[in-house]
Image (cartoon, rainbow, N blue to C red; front, top):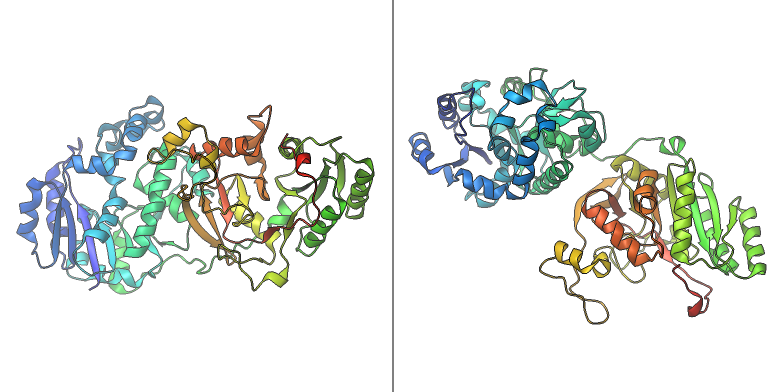
Amino acid sequence: MNTTIVTGLWDINRHNRSFDTYIEAFAKVLAIPQRMYVYVPEYLEDFVWQHRDSSNTQVKVCELEEIKRIYEPFWDKTQEIRTSEEWVKRAGWLEDSPQYKLEWYNPIVQSKMFLLHDATINDESDNDYYYWLDAGITNTVPEGHLRDDAVLDKLHNLTEASELLFLSFPYQADQEVHGFKYNAINKFARKKVEYVCRGGLFGGHSECIRMANGEYYNTLQATLNDGYMGTEESIFTIMSYIKPSTYRRYALEENGLIVKFTEALRTGTAELEETDKVRVIKSNILSKVKTNLYMLTFNMPEQLLHTIETMEKTDNLMTHPNMYIFDNSTDELLMIKNRNIAQKYNMEYICLKGNTGICRARQTIAEHFHESDADYMIFFEDDMTFNSIDEDVNHCRSGFRSYIPNIYELIHKITDYEQLDFLKLSFTEVFGDNNTQWAWYNLPQHKREEYWPFYNELPIQGTDSNCPTTKFDTIDVIDGVSYAIGEVYYCNWPLLISKEGNKKMFIDVKFKYPFEQTQMSHIFQLTKEQKVRPAVLLASPIWHDRIKFYEPEERREN
């Protein structure tokens, strides 16, 4: 018996249900033989000890004010949405629901994951598996299943240590799911939502719970900040759609009753919904999308040719996209050579008629992409080369692989699957790596104080060895290649950018004098506001390989 059952009970004065019914059900839950970690207010502690023994029970006295402290980052937004006319009018049933009538309902149910996670830390046992069980679950599950048939001892056999168990039931919706706008939950789930995950019983290995707690926190924060709210079941559902191989599901019937699951556990017939153990996205993405590849060059035909030759060795890179050379050159003879290179490789040549600067040209390219019919764009400067298969055995200074086969298709898969605004194609760069938050240097001081209130003073000169690190929300793997989603800073290193991402990053706001630092600051603020969703490969298949050099005074930003 390597399992701890976690539960809790609070009286929040439900208008349509007597608290006595919960006390009766709670007593039946307390009769189960497994070890328990129980959250209750002080006045219910004696009730717990009437039914439990300290040898297999730990009680955490937790008043409603403690729930408010745990839920504090989300409290104001939850109450703002709950009391808004727009939210309560979303469905006729909401006006009589505990979500609407009771200020404590959503803070409690949406804290279940936090309470489960805290139990994995504070439980004095050496158990590995933890499961949340609603205090009132015996209203719909026979107490004998839980008390006499030892079904709870069988839970950990269903999942591996890297997986969390959810129960789901089919759900047909067109307007809302538990008060959460249907089109919005589909957007967050990145698929059409056709089931909902229950909140009455869930859990798994303590290590997986710690990981899930962070993802739950970020998803709850993102949805509330955008003005959307259902219950904890909405967040569980989103998580299970995004990571089906991590958040494993047992499918209940349409009535959502958990008794089907406990009966299957009792008879040894419980089977989870199938999912790929190693996530391989089977997709013909390249046949569905159009991509523009842009190369910016300046007075160095030899450099341009050198980079293109490395790109030729990369699958699909020179055959799938529409390719453009934007030329900042100032020498007419060199322009002719660049035009000839473009013709040789079937690339459209666009002369910028002088040195408009790296960032001004970058803005021009963004506007060209915005007006095109392409879905994605890749931006390169002419000294950014693809590593060949010869680098397959090597790693960058950050410890990541330096070569990725079939990278062109892979980056499209990741960007499409994760609905990213942009994906950086290399973790390690010349002057810095993506573990350091370089936007910290370039933000306005008031934003630096807002985002890093305890570390917001720039060094007098140079860089700061204690500069804040990049905050990553999720690390995942597709086709054997890892990537990180989070507060990834923008810079001019190669990226794959979506049409919508390009609009938010470069079109909605245009700077009279664009600088890389300015654009980095602007896009980072959009990321903090959760308006831009970026990621970076945990790999470094691109390298800065300049073989020809121009005079320093010729370099221009705009």
